[in-house]
Amino acid sequence: MKIQFISCVFLFVSCTSGVKLKAVNLGPLFHDSNSKVWMVDKVIADKQNFAPRINSDKDVIVFYETGKCMYQPMKTLGDFPGKKGEYSLFSEDKTLSLYFTNERWDFKIDALSEDTIVLKPLNTSDLKYSMILVPFPEF
Image (cartoon, rainbow, N blue to C red; front, top):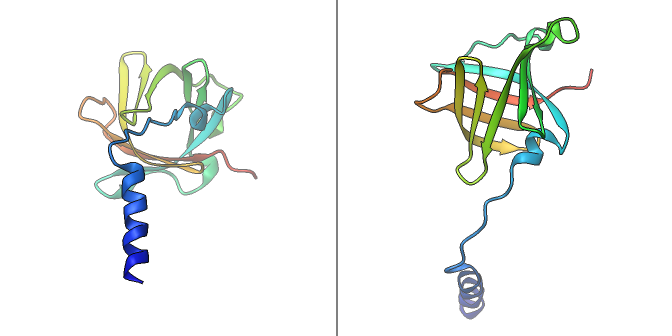
């Protein structure tokens, strides 16, 4: 039993030692190789959520593969243009920057999955709130 355990540990340690892993390209998760709508599910400051409870009152961010983005209240979709900007996603550093006219939002991607993105503001950010994004829900 001891020999099997030691052999197993040796196998896993020897396979990964000294190997530098490449960063995964996070872009397709944000824009699905075209465009993707993410809903701002939570806006957190001082451990309190300031986002509306009702989904139809929340905001959305649309990420386009071209590097453009749009931030808009869900209620005004189709009626008024949103806040248009551009974004830069740095997969290796796990950071995201959104550039709007006279405003820059810089985030650290704190947690990431196919159905949740947790963004924490960096000190350089004009927006000082954490945001939790979820895919635009089916109704």
